[in-house]
Image (tube, rainbow, N blue to C red; front, side, top):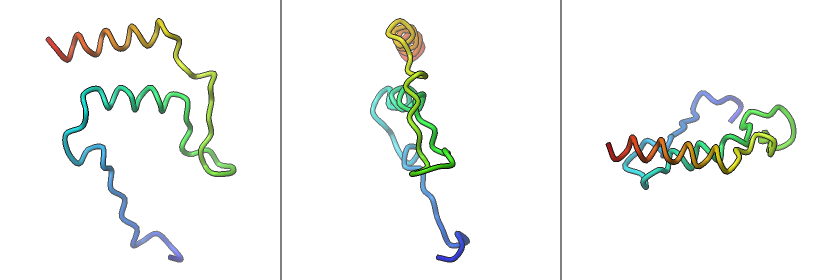
Length: 69
């Protein structure tokens, strides 16, 4: 298409029930990605943003505590 006036984007993440903690896994994955990078493929990987083990553990603990409360 010459323009995107007929483009339809569907966010399947919100189309139904997902696996438990899917949003958390997606969040951890996207911490190291830039999906709007202006060069190359449009995606850049920044490993410096990767969370440390203790940060992941704290995030998981808080998430699961809130999930089960």
